[in-house]
Image (cartoon, rainbow, N blue to C red; front, side, top):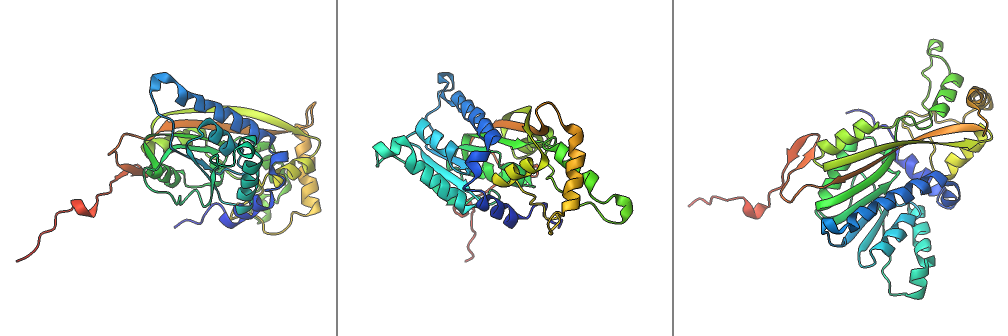
Length: 315
């Protein structure tokens, strides 16, 4: 069995620490979230003749902004806000209390908070109409297993709508630290500083292997600018996007190494400062009709109730 790519405990710690600072720093994340929420307008198309969803899952909900928006869109739906970090869920709960709709109507429905891992969803089979996930899955290494879990909880013809980061994300940062770290000839393997990300083909293939229908994927590249490397690193810490790789260096980055990385990063400086590239992948797909086997790793897996298995009794 191969070693895990990510340290799940470190992911939880990083996002727990950043819960209070997240919203002030997550400019890009909020912009991607807004575009993803706009895609939900597709469900309101009368041509589809779809009823309003009864249960919606916001996976990797963070501070709950998308959960609040979807609860307002579908006020009668049960909204489930799920996140790995409990402090994020506390922020989400407080944000829900401050929302104008609930201040004026204390009986209005609020999102329910669930602290759990995306890799092991504590939800019943065929219980979710819409599964929404904004910039969460880049912290998951086994998309096949996660998408199989999504298939399990989604109702037949349920909607999956997600965004994640692609492999060109933060390539400048990756390159700068690669130049600052020991070369392979020194006898030391350079420690990783930036997570590897699945490309758009890998995300699409994993959706198909899981049995999702009509996947539609898009790729966008955006850039943010910073006065120096320290400013970029502060923002990454503020949103919890620190190095959570299991093979990461477990000691502090020394001043000399950081200075070397900062010098290497200067080669990319432009008119607006140091650029940071973000490759954003969005995907929309549908769970198949009722009775379709769940696919795990491209293999159909069926479930048969015990009551339907004939039992021969002797005598």
